[in-house]
Length: 217
Length: 186
Image (cartoon, rainbow over all chains, first blue to last red; front, side):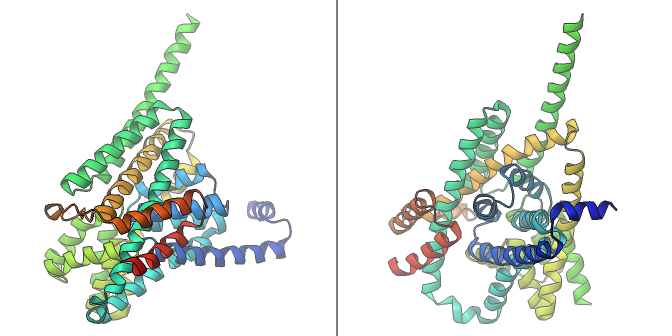
């Protein structure tokens, strides 16, 4: 019974709803394929592309959802890019949607590595590919810097001091450790920020409680 | 049974890769190089360089590569899918837990802490990627930093920024176009 109510909510007309869903799943697959082929340089690049495509252009997920999904992907094991596209796919079209985005994200790297494995010696000397990669790397850095500008703008617009401090500290720790020492501290930054967030939420709660008690007496 | 070994090896790597991408390196090294001996140290570092140059996360690329090397194409498929199992399970569990208990202080605090941290981590990644592209300073080989300013990369990056922010061309297209531009200019 509950299932019926749910599907009725999602699509008024069953037939057109079904078609729409199939179309969405195909589109999810193609987008995942496209994003995965262009995103090299790590999960954060895919994150910015996913944000741009699904949130800004298609409007299939809201900014709030993207932020939630990014946080979950970051806190889960595995690749952030795949986790994130899996969650977006699930949100948009259920289990099949998640399957479509995961397959779409896996195919490009799988083929590239398979090709490299069998034809590495032939490809190794092609400077053309090297130049292609260099150009793409410059493009990637531009895209990710553009996302960074958006993220900082949105953080400062919200005027939430806690978020701004965490953002800056996370940036500094990660950038300094990565660039100066070549060590990835991502996991520690995530744990630290989660602990701080939980602590802060309890502190706020008790402060509010004490204030309420104080007002009473 | 090589497929079973691949399955367990990548299940383990998948479980301990927390924080994405390069977080897999230490685990992968202990499993692939020291444990099973599927890769030599040289092959392993080549693998890291290769992943920097190609699309796809390091862990997935290494799964494909090691799988093919030890068990053919099917091995590649097995290793890649095994790597995904822990992330699918944990990611969806977190998703449903957070959805259900998002009003709880613990969960809301957890999310409130991680969200801005992810923005900070993205910024740091952007910073290092841009430095690598413009100055050729490799993030992974700290000892070999040589600051050669790359004018062509700078031009491509500037054009891409304009394309993304002012003209609002799809960033995926911008990245592919900047690759073409790289071939033409270098």
